[in-house]
Image (cartoon, rainbow, N blue to C red; front, side, top):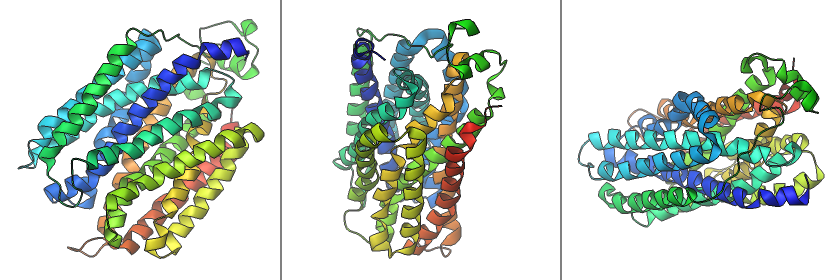
Length: 418
């Protein structure tokens, strides 16, 4: 890509980076709400993790419709619509917070999270392929790493921002209306500003229905002859890989406060920084590593780091093991961008449809944490709190099989093109 063409997308990518920040902020707030709602409503572990399920289930239900919306109205209008819906979700948290005297307040929180998840679904469907297409596909993981720095910075700041208003140990939910109102207002203003900003539409090679003679990529030429997005085995395998990846990325950040409380550590909310700080460090390192090593090789190194960190998380004493969550965050940094790049490369006219499939896979961020919560309920003694050992066993059951599958995809799965 020429320097002139690269500069053309510099400002749009800044807009997309801010959008990644919005996504991280919204999900980060949800992470701290898990222990807050658990204590406020005396919920089981499994029930408390439903706050994440409410957000991420929107990806399952609205992933395909979101792809249709992007195809019909384009990236810019989809982005504005997504931010508007996310803002509405934040505002719905206000009446939820004021209903803290009954279980109906909890269900209202779930509704607000689901609405925010709908906006998040549309936003993810628009911005991830946008970043992937804006430049050489071989450098897509690098661009995703830059976006990830914004996303994880917000994931780190979200819980800290909310903890200024809510005490995690002794939560008063009515105090949450101010931070959620502020967040909703800021997102709404950002959406309004975007209506006045030029954001060019982009297309992948062969995406506009060009004839095979008009494109140069052999994979795109082969994709042009396909009739359905389901005719790409590597896309289906990649969708499963992304499903598992989002689950293992979300789980440490959603459970770390609970884990810290089980260990008996002071100020458990501050441990929510471990995963995001690890990922931010990983993103910075990855930007340079990807200059030297291809993304399909780099992901292998980081998966092995994740497997090692998982084993240490389980084998070390809990007070030391909790620091391994930063190692997992570090390892996760390159996976999202690499899986996206390996999966949608050469899909041509099916690029947006493939993006909506991959966005549906983000529901893994709901399924795995909820499964983890119910695993804790099954492992701990009846009527007692989960012990650090219970957490470590549940981590082992979730993490190891997931990373092994992602390793399979990075080694073999992405090559299955027939």
